[in-house]
Length: 106
Image (cartoon, rainbow, N blue to C red; front, top):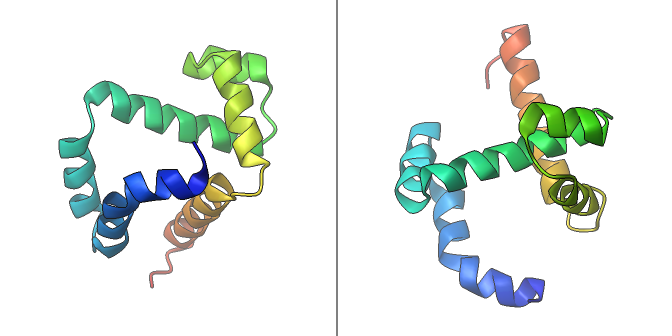
């Protein structure tokens, strides 16, 4: 399925996520929307992306996350592709983490 088709399916959800104002609201929405297994899978995929960005080996990622090498390769493909979704999310997380660690708040 092409990105434009996926955007159509995902449009309502992305609109809601873009408008939610707090981590609590986002969590509550995603908790209602997703199963526990899906939440864990999504979280692990993002963890894998961060580990790949930090140059952790596939073997170590598999050991630490239990994610298959096939899934790790797919995440790597998207991490290094044109979409930049993982890269943007990792950048946001780093900026939030940096502000938290330095004591600066927006």
